[in-house]
Length: 408
Ligand code: SF4
Ligand code: SF4
Image 1: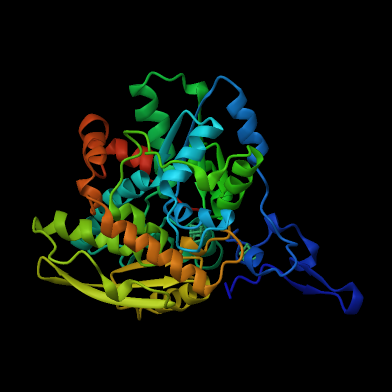
Image 2: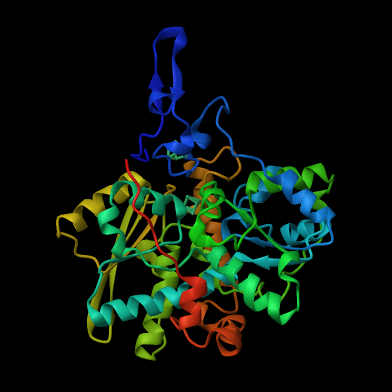
């Protein structure tokens, strides 16, 4: 399904094994850590490395431990507590994290709004210069490792923006830490993610340990249960400010097509100075493997495409390689349906359940007062007080990254 072929059957009959080639370690293979095999394995033989003990250890110290939660987690965590798929449990999730003992409960959606502000500026710049097009999104670490292994010659097309949770970590360990006078050694950042690949991402040297631990949705559920918290009876609570404020555009990052839609909302309005008449880009919503559309920005037609699942990404990469690609901007997410179907999500994760989680995400966006990343007041304040403007020297140093060529 992922077209990676990191694991396969080896040996015969009773001796059959699922293993990387030559029984090498998964770590030394082309595996991109997406965790889709883990969701598919019928006997739970594959699972994530559990980091809950290390997080609990950090919480027992005097350190300032903050947590951020990805958009897709609030749309699926309830399933671990027998709530129907598609139940949004944002308030209960925040309340449970406060009970567990985190000092501040922040939102990766703030990081997503920041990503969009930077990425939209990057797209406008590339379009103006007609350079390194099509631009491809960069917020999925599974996808990034895939292109590093299989199409390293196309890396110049990938946006240099870090993923939302890493942008959040970079801002927490600079702006937030300075503003609230927290000792550098005392700040610990934990990310709750629907994703197993983010555990790998934070170990990349380019990410400079901006995030200390990643827990999946399943690990968070285990943590809540281990603390004997009655999740379904919890009262709804709010995220902390300022890194807990977000827009509807930050919410839809959790679904395939969401990053593109959020970026187009901001790119259109910042490039033209006009308001978008319609915020919903219905042609790139939904569960299809491949979606496309176009938009006119300052008299230029921008063609865009959205793919999910790495097998589908390969097709579009072949088009770019053979100079037959008609798109200017492409979103790629490794998991089918996007992060709502990530390898760290509750089991089972099937098409029907993923659709319900997706509906919850779009409903959340619709009900948000602010629906565009560049209108998030906390983002506006961050640029005013600290970063200057999108793509400034400081923004580049903290929020952008580079990639490496890996072998196959
Ligand atoms: S984590 Fe993803 S890439 Fe790695 S073996 Fe599993 S499905 Fe394949
Ligand atoms: S699509 Fe989302 S959950 Fe899946 S690997 Fe990418 S970032 Fe992680």
